[in-house]
Length: 604
Image 1 (spheres, rainbow, N blue to C red):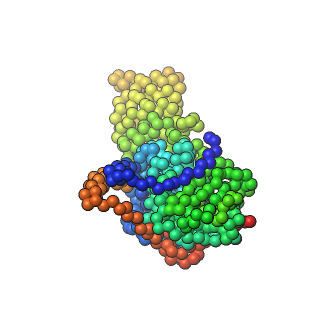
Image 2 (image 1 turned 135 degrees about the vertical axis):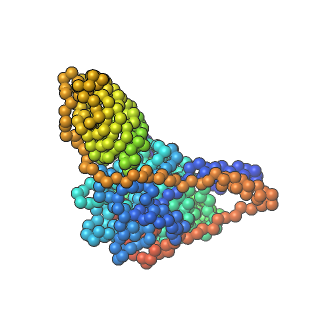
Image 3 (image 1 turned 45 degrees about the vertical axis):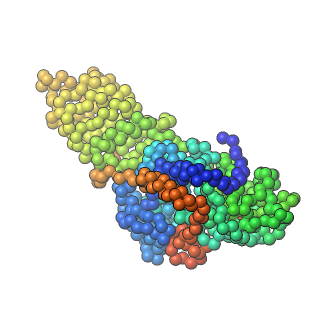
């Protein structure tokens, strides 16, 4: 992948006709109908409610069946949504599964408020994954921490998983949010890579900006001016934000600048831990209508080298500069330096900075996954396991082993003592299986013939079930197979002439009882997690079209600007979830304890 730097100047377009307006509105509504997902889970809660930002929160019980609910200590209360959490004390990993549309680009945010719920004053660390990919090593503290990723989903569901990595430090989660984005947003990033948010800043703002001001519910943290910088306000009544990555108008209504036209603005990367590939957006919008003798023009310099063409921010619109797959280090600086003909100092309204992931996995072998689904369909007790069964490699499902192939294959099933009853579905497509342990269950009927067709099968433990009939010839004639059929009283014996294959596993090996690897028996909930995705009903499309024609009927041609609605928080730097913390900005931090804002300073 080659680094990309691009400058996009976004201009307003005037509609030529009312009919063109109809087409645009219909297409916009249809786009929303096809892929809109807006899921907000209050983890550990069982209630549904609407918060001060008009976000509807759901309890998480329909999305996960394991874990236990807790409440933070009252002295650590931040907000309603952050006062409950779900804690996981068992299994290799525990996963939330959410229905989406294949190929949609989503924003996922996971939030963690320890709140000393266990009275130990010992915030845990653990691993966070999505769709079988490593996301972050979560390091919780006595503050709210959240992690955010943006990527293109490869399947019909997305999974978010938590896994224990340190003894006696149990994973937990306070909130999980999923938002679908427009297909053209962040499209300069290869869809085989994810973006991990490092920071998102609204310079000059005195409050956190999110939904409903940002319809995609991105969280924009206030950026306070550093040394030599001043805040300036935009006097444009309306700012067109309909193109590229759709920054909300609220983040363009303020900016930081310098007091002197010859000074420059420097953004350093000291907050980065080491040399990393990044994706970065810078947003620029002129804050006042310039006179004919006024010019605001500046370039971006990386370190001391020119990095962009001259930028002349438009009034009532915005210019966006994006940097894709570009490697920077903690010593890297970006400077906004005025050009020689500029009469006004540089400015910047907002910035987004992401780290770029490694290439995303395609997941476990699809035919193995399909067979596991059929196994879960047959045995309800297995439906508690979600997410990728083999990935990441250190965090497989508790009852499978996997190969190191790409994609990985499932090589073992350890289902001893899972209280399985009934008959086995056809698993013949799992042709990489080497070990199957089904002992100590209540499986009945004849032993399935497909077991003998598995080419790599070496260990088969069917002990202590209720199988009946004879051993299939495909098993009894299979060389090198170690099979245990003891404890199945209805299997016919060698004295029964109708039982031609009883008791022998191969010409060389007699059936033997063996101790197979198996997890301890656990109490299971027999309920399949309900997969819910919030979508806009199709009838909205119909009413949108009806509404447009009604407008045309009354010859209304005047566009009405949408009024901006201020989010619930009003004090600068507060957590997007905090209801009444005054100016205590230290209650919120980004992942890995990075500073909330890039270090920004003026220079001359």
